[in-house]
Image (cartoon, rainbow, N blue to C red; front, side, top):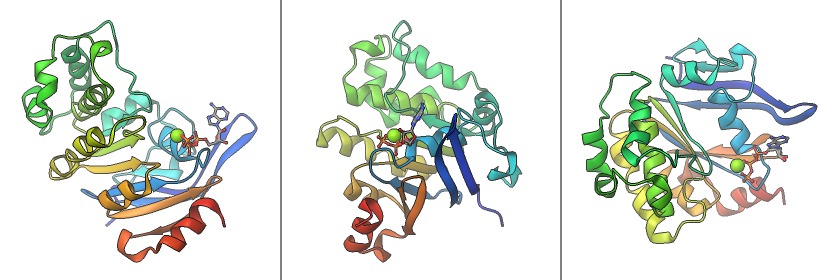
Length: 233
Ligand SMILES: Nc1ncnc2c1ncn2[C@@H]1O[C@H](COP(=O)(O)OP(=O)(O)OP(=O)(O)O)[C@@H](O)[C@H]1O
Ligand SMILES: [Mg+2]
């Protein structure tokens, strides 16, 4: 059977600048993969292409065995691929709950509702009427993940959800992943913290300068291999 989501020889460009050089990644239903790599390795670019913010040849990105490369972002979300953007991007003029409801506007059926989400992140229920601007960084990240889940995705893409957060808050966020994958959702986390990535992922991909330099299960990869793939030394 074809993977749930797959890229084949994926390239990406910003004008004349080539950021990705033939990325092959495959994700099955319910699987969690982590993408690690240094600054500028192409991790965010990879997610941007998948969620339709950057162009691609149709067949370079396949979802449920259909070519989706280059589809507009709204079509990608409607298919069940949701992205938690770097920097959270909540609407400060709307309440937390209104932000969450925007995810539901996509109109996909599935396990996630406001009620279910508030059970996952009880603090969001408490703060439902507040502006996201008044939330802590960790709470904003919960709201951003929540909004993505409200689209009932089968693939959840998360770009550096732990960036700038305290360790205790990061643990709280990552503690939500099992409940999400239990719904059969595949998760892609981009993570600078290698230990965090190795802890949560079924498989890890290391990117360097727009290429995959290493892939495998956390168990199968040695520290030395990861260091070499990450830094190229
Ligand atoms: N909007 C853009 N215009 C031009 N070049 C870009 C743009 N965004 C990223 N790049 C370049 O593309 C390459 C990959 O960047 P990308 O943001 O995907 O890396 P990253 O792995 O997510 O890094 P970081 O860990 O810093 O978030 C880098 O060389 C970066 O300078
Ligand atoms: Mg990035």
